[in-house]
Structures are given as structure tokens and as C-alpha cells.
Image (cartoon, rainbow, N blue to C red):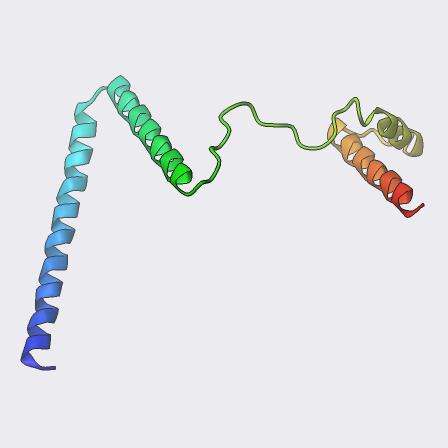
Length: 123
């Protein structure tokens, strides 16, 4: 290795070591300040940081032209129990001895519904 390359590599290694030390000190200062806070203050700080993070992500999404994420209640996926009622009855008729949970009955009703619509599509 030439003298310039060796010196450049040593300088880069020294700068990285200094950056690592600064990072370690910053982390330790963060821990120290967190220990000095009450639980309520830590919670407030975390809440504020979370809101700032969410606002930053929303701004990044807006800059990319991506629609903002919904903050409302989650939207139910698939048909409602009322829409599946006929298929629930058919599932129960086909499986009289099965003591199934609601989720098992729902899965069975969904399968029956898909079969029904597939048959309609073939006709």
C-alpha cells in the first residue's frame, strides 16, 4: 500500500473510531437522562417521539404521492356473518355431528360460498 493510501485508510479508521465513541457517549447520555425522568415524563417523551415519527412517515408518503394510511378502525375483510347466513346453515346441515367454533363454521361457510360462486361462473 502506498503512503497516501495507508494514511487515508488510517485517517478513515480514526474518524470511524471517533464517530463510534461519540455515538456511545450519546447513547449513554440518553440512558442517563431517561433514568432521571419519572415514568410519566418518559411516557410523554415517547408519545411525542412516536407522533413525530408518524408525521415524518406521512410527509414522506405525501411527497411520493402515496395516499395517507387510514387511522380509523380496521376494515373487516370478507363477507359479514349476515351475508354468510345461508352458507352457515348449509355447513351445519352438512356437518351435523361437528361441534365447531364460530371460526371453523365461518371458514366452512366461506368455502361453500366460493364453490357456489364458482359454479355460477361456469354456467
